[in-house]
Image 1: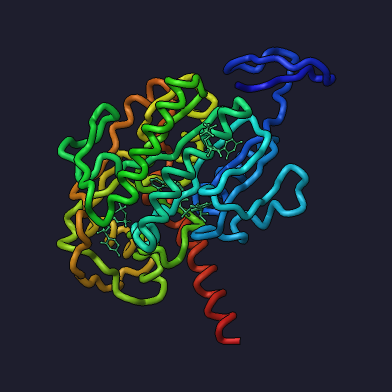
Image 2: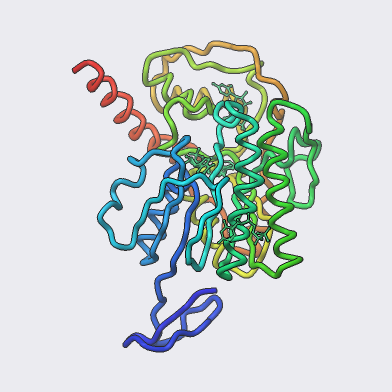
Length: 343
Ligand code: NAD
Ligand code: UDP
Ligand code: UDP
């Protein structure tokens, strides 16, 4: 639901996708849960730039004020320290629900809390959407496919998830969040959107979150060996964050509920990724093999035909183009941290 007003002010109208002639788009009130995190903060930048008013709701478990500090003082920006597991009353037009730790290291840290965040947190945000009539977007994950038996993964695939493993708090949590979202939609007519996000990287990722791209980049910059888990032949498909944000916004503004895979179909083994990191940062970086973690998916690659067709979306930034953008951010943060601990 996008609202427009006549260029001179005055009447509001509901105009679906296209901006009617002579009318300018009216800023929306948007809440972004998890907006102080990696993906959320990039989304907030785009929404603010577009002229919307943004409320970030975040408990700072993995997010940082620094990620949104450049908006402090902007009257269209508000930051609330709040845990989505607790109810909250807000008046908004759209809800981007991102709050949830995304790195395996973080979501396994307190698995019960991860489940509460996904289930109770999502329930609360859907309750909010229902009360104020807002459109709700869930950031689900490729992890709903588990260790997939179908490759590449299509949205119609139901997945191969271990319900009692160490990753289940996240995988099953997100699956339940999807179920809740669809039940609020079917049963109560709430406008919803579901994105299934595949591995995403870029500036502002937590330095030591244990994810493979952030690990390799930080390790290469610190002149430490790159830690490849298992035999390094497992694959992932890495999406640059600006592509994801574009996809999320198109999904929210479009007419389709989803779920939609949002990811870059370029598939790399972890050894190939290590090679790209070596080429980008340090050709002499060493590789060290470590035992793999439990239930690690062997392959992952999105089929994005549905998003291409219905959202007109596809990624534009390759790993070779995106990685250097992340490296400059990491270099600056790692070496300024070192300076501040030395002084
Ligand atoms: P992130 O950890 O950087 O951001 C998550 C944010 O949510 C943080 O700011 C954190 O403080 C906040 N948060 C966590 N629990 C909360 C709670 N109970 N109440 C309020 N705030 C809470 O992770 P990200 O990579 O930016 O991921 C954002 C969303 O995208 C998550 O829902 C994640 O599951 C999903 N996703 C991300 C990826 C990826 O590769 N980055 C892949 C699939 C799905
Ligand atoms: N909720 C919220 N903010 C709101 C409206 C609801 O946090 O503006 C929470 C509410 O506390 C409840 C959940 O969302 O725990 C689901 O709300 P809903 O009204 O759908 O269910 P009910 O309260 O009837 O169980
Ligand atoms: N991985 C690795 N070295 C690391 C961290 C991760 O080889 O230092 C591997 C991990 O075993 C997995 C892949 O990289 O196969 C992606 O892991 P990540 O934690 O980034 O994301 P996810 O498993 O959620 O896709």
